[in-house]
Image (tube, rainbow, N blue to C red):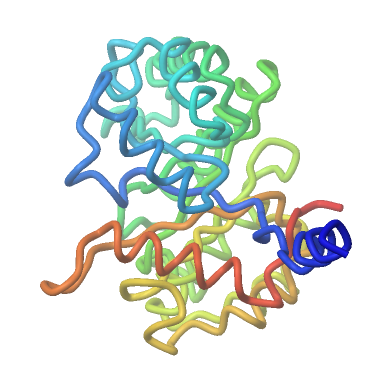
Length: 288
């Protein structure tokens, strides 16, 4: 009887749900630090239930948060986090924009791609670009993204672009939104889009409509709210996740912009991952 009771009690205890949930480390910038100091924060995030990370700490010296790429990867491995993606920025210069020749800027990417390849990164993402562009200059940016994406593809890495709200403004000399222009003038073979669903909503856009209009283009999503996920009620996360297959989603990345005065950033990070773990519409894996 004792053995039977123990077995029944053991069977009644459910293992906690584990889902693929990435985190943008910009969220914890106020406590993250650099070098060995990032390890305790990574451990806390892993313990909460995050499974992958997206840094925003690449240096022109070829380091990530002050660590050599291999050491950065080892720090993630140590706590069981996947080296999923990264945010890096390299703007083309005014002269390159004018001439359409961005050869010099492309050289910068060689070290960047090599460093992230060593760090085990699968996706490299540009998180912003110049604003208030006319069609000619925006086309040059799209050509640049195609060229960067081709370089990344040659190294076995996917390249994408992350939006804020201004991409849903009109091109200065066209009756077309910047985001639509970019989707239509970048090569799907070389450029995907990491839609930040919060900034899309802030730009008065509808994420699901974009998924349906440009299916398969959104391999990553930034899952974000005003603070912790689901608390504001302004983002329709259920509809977004229910259309993830149409969008082409392969992974999600949580980003938290900040926290109220009576909470810490780690309170927001914990509330956000708990929300996703509990939400029935959030899948365990993507791309299946």
